[in-house]
Image (tube, rainbow, N blue to C red):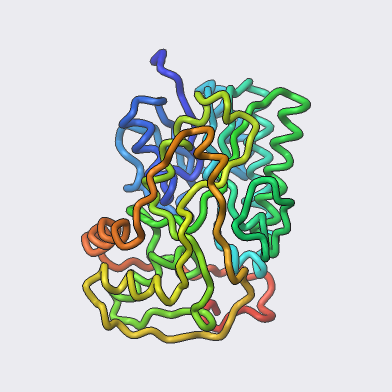
Length: 334
């Protein structure tokens, strides 16, 4: 085997993972092994220079074999089923994949003396009425997805205290860009809008559309995540990362339509769903540790994503069939 250091990227066939793997390879940071079960990602998202393994983080026997074989120096844990709203209705699935799967990785990282475990959490851990969200605020998640992410953060802190496993937690938010699964109707609103435009369908907005989010261009967050294991000042800390300027979903819809060359594309409003109304975060900590970070203006970042979306065309992914609770499930998700 090569003497180059090796990293595991879970979820590397998904959106953020595909972008991070390319960054790691382009900057010669690590040789990369991608583990992905392709439930939300695509095999052709993984570049040829990476080693691809199809499998799940819930398969602890598979993880044990991989850690034995590759002796990973770092783990980038990006794999998750990141549908916050849907997580209310798939609680067992959510905790199995997003919590138990993470624990499997932490166990193997401890046993194999991984140098640093990088975890992508979410601003879903904050809940409502904590804006701008700061890392020193107590987690108050309002959905099972946020609960699982907060639990993994806590478990990493305990694993560091007891076993010395270094970790870095990032809480990225509302990412968009190339390689996003635009066919997923449960998450990633920018991709949903673009896919609806390609299909000639109206853009759909839950409620009045005055929900506020800071939409973050994916390439702006890759540097700190990629270089976190080598940044000792970041070890055993939590960082918000992403854009700082919030927009309403109504404004986002207009800007997406303009980027897609469909400025007058129709919009329909669906019934309000249970979600945090206003969510954006403070990024003082990440800038202090990693230095000034780029923040691509929303209209500018939408352009390359729109070009990529037009090139790959509309996509469909299977409907989620394993709904565990259907009470109060939004009709459009049935």
